Length: 536
Ligand code: GLC
Image (cartoon, rainbow, N blue to C red; front, side, top):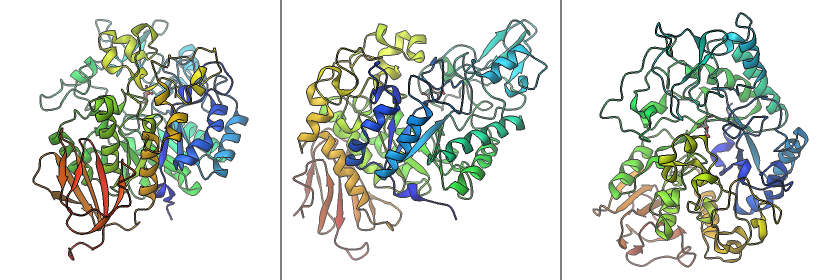
């Protein structure tokens, strides 16, 4: 029988470089995480996904792996990982590793062997093609980070494919030996007690076998970022039907261990995600990314929630932010309004069936930091300096402000962190917010507690039209979830008596409101009505 412990778990993404620095070198590490497990347990976290910690030359900060069964010395040792798993387990927390199967580092021994011996067995681990007759790249594909998706190996005269940096060559998932390698890698980490894997770019492992040119993006498909990558229609490089073959093979390894396969399946529509979530095979669940591309307006938030309501129950992990984009609270308008909206949208998503996830620092209401271009480290920002202030992933990657002390509790006093703190104040810190029951930290903690108290067997969500464009609401049986997506206060008429199960303001929670409730812009609430639907 399929284990489903994750259906009752609250997840938390740790971006390891920026979470906590245990050895005082300015870079976060495994011992740093161990030192903060008590805080995560206090917050109510059950599942921690750690961004890649395997050996890497760090061209993409760990997403360029040069050894899949080791730990990078910057982050610690295998013994530290074992201790993290054990210490986390003592607190009821499971650890999820980040598996990067689409590409390796160009310094991985497989790629080195592929370069050194074009007729040897490792050549076919990657995707090589001859140049076009004019000597140019084999097709018109672009890299996610900008520029061509091909780099020429002058020694052999062939190009290798890389959907990300040239130092991240794509693996050939049509080669059975690649499948064998990854089965071994999964088993290695499961044996060490990890609870599963977050699968990096799970939707793009297989490419069309002929690698045809991509057509231009149709006018009705919006450009996500305005980059040259988005000018093409990704019908042959992403979302190929065969992707599920790799997922199925991994599921055979994870299922007996009761482990979770959670995909970074970056497809923005409900329809496209369906094929990845067969209950009996393939991924157990995927992150749902539309909130990372939301341009806030009541109509856009309504469309997003209506789409979320259509997703099959339990197959999505809810996020509003990650290490791959600016902070949600800034994207949603900035200041306290943006913070309320980030928490409010999160409350709406969490009221649906799925896995709640918090990205480190969201629980503190962190906004984008003030970073200068010269401080930025993200390869995406470096390749697009004109756009860095808006798109740089560094905006979500500055170190956690744990306390107002020198080093902000992230690193030792006097040590320069790998990215600047970017103007964090004492009020932003975990220590200050923990002492203040009205802080963002306490509000997020209460949301987690309220989520845990939701009944297990809530029926499917049913949209409630309140007739006010700014007021968005749905019911799941006795639970009513409502969000004010507009810019003015709105009154929420309750269909019957009930108790407020979650509200940002602790004074409202647990109360039985009389008459209409007033919601401030960006605020959401959950009310547990006394009566079952139909009896109201
Ligand atoms: C994923 C990661 C991102 C990385 C990319 C390439 O999208 O989240 O940080 O750059 O894959 O591995």
